[in-house]
Length: 467
Image (cartoon, rainbow, N blue to C red; front, side):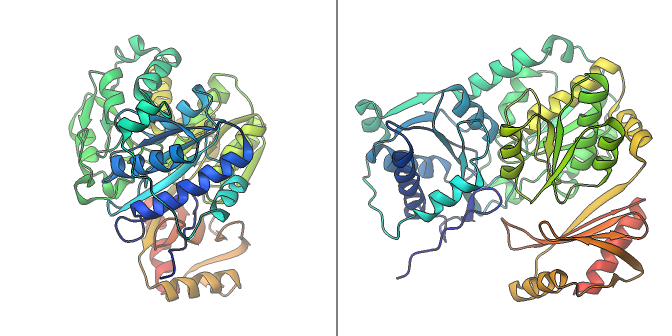
């Protein structure tokens, strides 16, 4: 039987549990990681952990078993942890790599394997490709218990959540935040960030902050359609002025204003740039993924900040952050990193930063969005994820790549870009983008217009054109 081909996508290797994401395949990837590390350094050390997803402890034990058997020291997190906790731990503990078992925002049937570098962020694309090339067809699983590995000295335990909470306490004034006139609601989406806000902001209103490995049947992605309860809570509770949501491994962010309106990642990026530069006087490059609004370029031009656009995948942004002075780096999907923190997406850190912005200025999230509009104008963004037959998806992407579309219904365009997928700059000032997901069997259709109604109409015309 031919072994499964294991391919790392935009953010790690992800697959359906028990179909392709199996103990055996996790062992194969771990053997490749061990072999790669032994080529690079003597006495390598890896930090390992898992989020709340089904099978996390079992798969993490497999990682530790294979790494230790191949001469790699393992430092394992106690209990479930978020991806930012793992990345911070790799940097803080001086490890050579990190492994977090998570499928991030994917549906609950998935699990995944993310690699983290010694800089405290995603392993570089070059190094990921090197590990991937070493994945063997066959692997032996030693079957050692965690107790025996610990007794041998090859396995140590660390309380990564405690380390991360202490770090946040050093970077934010929680005495002021806990007295803020703006009350916060937090939706963990049953994910790995659930304990942090409970520990740091005891007066916060908490939603879905309990351990449910199946995420109650819903993909833990912090987008508007998945956050109905948080939106309702914000709209019906007058004292709540900011609603924060993070995904399954707490590296992505979504926000709600005091009226229960969703504040997407494009707006969050703009607010963070505005806060850090205009209010804090900080400078640096802004690195954004191809699917991010061009309004970021407009703000950076107004503020004299350089911009770099990358393919989709935070690993590309993190690589720039490691090598250059970057103020903010982020993606449309809600993964955002900021200067002064690790070069990693961190939904909780970003949320606290905006909560601090509100508390310091006495302005609501809605008012901060209005400030941003004063610089770059108003806009509305939305996205359709189309689950369609793979052959049709490929046909659409191939047609787009060959300049096969000349208009989308009434919406014409005069310029396209093809960094990662195809982006159409519409003549009405908005844009459309077509791209196949790198982690799920979906065709993503992105759109920006000048109003909510126009954006919905653009998406409708695009769908009618391509299907």
